[in-house]
Length: 98
Image (cartoon, helix red, strand yellow):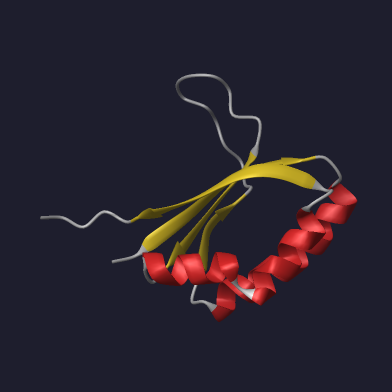
């Protein structure tokens, strides 16, 4: 069953964040991930307005998504993001109809 990583990111230093954006796709691709959305246009339909950059990545399964997050490749990307942005990153199982 696929799994999804949802990230809500508050970019504080756009120039430094560009370095993270170069490295993250390398790790995502290595672990079979696929960007579904990567900070494009959005509208908040209900609730408080979303002001963060929202990224959704699909992985083959939950275990692979976790391996990606803990990988040396993504650890390097996270180091580049450390002073450039803060965020919330979650992994969740995809929907599997009964």
